[in-house]
Length: 432
Image (cartoon, rainbow, N blue to C red; front, top):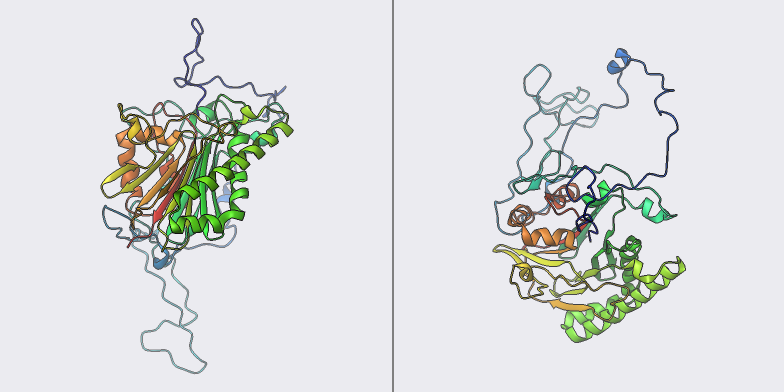
């Protein structure tokens, strides 16, 4: 949650910088002298450019075709074309390398074969990639105006008030893999406003295997609380701790479709995790409220014969499904008067206090090719308000499973005025 959305007090002049930007924190480290005054700057040695360091690596096929992501959902078929043929320094195309020929001693080479010891050429088979591949570059944005904040992290958070944990949290986390019938991609990214203010990421994400179940979850630390990053990361760790021993029971409940029993058991597990989270906060000398965080999670069986997915949530965020006909809400809340109720829940319940207000559901109408999108409100809100963002992500996530780096690039697509942390986990159901 973004704590920097309220306007400045009357008469106060805002600090120059991006609109609605928080005030930068004063870095406790002060440099008495210039860090450059003792440097002995010399021009580079031109001979160093001619030196060859290490082995020369020639490009080649890095991923077998059978292991590439399969097409998902509606959209252009994922026709995978090779990169353009490499060009030699002389301007002509580079011939592909001839395969090595290994024969028993004394056996003559077939007609037209190259000698075993002949030198290979400088290129191998072309590297294949999905059609949505983009070369590395600045993060994309949607909307008529570009965001005012820089596109990349600037200041690095410092350790403030003895909070070493906050100073050690990375700016970005990305994860993923395959589990039974689903392929998973997850990312948690520090928002532009927290990057600008040199504050740590308050969101968290989780991908963990619990026996025959996959547990994925996201948590959003409440921005108005000073230690909410402890809460968001702590509740995910503790939820996994309490779900692991009950994985077989939860799997049976999903297999039989026992929604009431699933709600009762997951409610008790969340309550136990919240109680332990409050105890951890007190051991740190913090009031439990300062660790406030939201939570939402999905439990997915590895058995393809069990189509049910278990959902639980406390607080705001989004659970959406992407199909051929567009986006669909699976956690609607509100009257939908402005469109918000059709896509997203905006409850303000937070853990560890609101442990008794866990909302649960069983998703039993899963189809091959579905994409489930579980996210914090840093992504859910712009998905609701900005059709261009839905079109951007739907056009990519609805046709193929991206690689980890490409998924991270897509999940960070920027929208002006939406500068909060964002965490998202996507589940691609195996196509028919």
